[in-house]
Image (cartoon, rainbow, N blue to C red; front, top):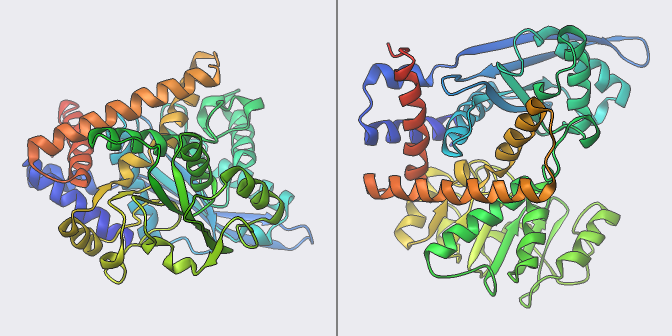
Length: 411
């Protein structure tokens, strides 16, 4: 099931639980604005190349829109629409004053030189500079983009609007990026997991974890869980998968991954089929890679008692039903992986104040937000007698609906 269908389905279920009227429900789904621009640049060999850039701005009832910019050859408009909408609910669940957006450029960043990427980023910024802004829409990095991309956007935007560090987040520290941003999503996953286990009278220490994906989120989550005494027994990335029932030595693995660009060849565990990592024996499963990995094919074989969705929509709705019948508790993506956007908000706040925080403050504020977020989700679960996913969706949708009605926007 594709991302847009799944997101719309969750939204509609939440709207029904909340008893929203159909006009309001319809207006909440329609994006505020969809932007599509042509970006033509000279390549290093002097020939011209044209790319399509776009930005979907979903909702701004609660504040400026916020979301990533991805550089990827197959940019599916449906998926981008779903991700923009998901950001609207995610920022509302996290209780930060934003709406959702998403965008990108259809290109293969691996095939472009650094100077070509810079030219492309600057042309894209020139085309959309009057449609983004500190109090309008604040982009961030996503697949195929990073702090350097944000630095170019900031510089190009500032040529038109004066120095504006708060126009993007995920910037290099030297240009107003926040300390703790790099680890934020992974650290948020840790705090979310702690909040959930706490509810069940357990702690991280001594629990067995399996993590699918060892990119930014997966590697930080593994490191932080390891530091808290959790046992990571299996791990995978695009190069391969490993297992060690006594617990993988995460610091050694991180060193290996840095030197060898992947898990493959690490000697601190047995090599296993990456497909089987999700069904290994563990207490807590953390999918931190792609969407749709837990589906009706493998849901019955999952042995974990808890699933923490560090990736976006890793669980298909069909798998959701199978797992809930088995009594597996799923902590949904729109809450579990909101640490990244929460610290992006802290970065924006610091830029607007012109006053930077130390890392300790960033992490303690993040913990406060994640802990409070879990409490709010649980309250919605009790009110509407529903699971955690619907608890999070009703919480997010309700906050956006209330802001929309208070502004007098409802149809």
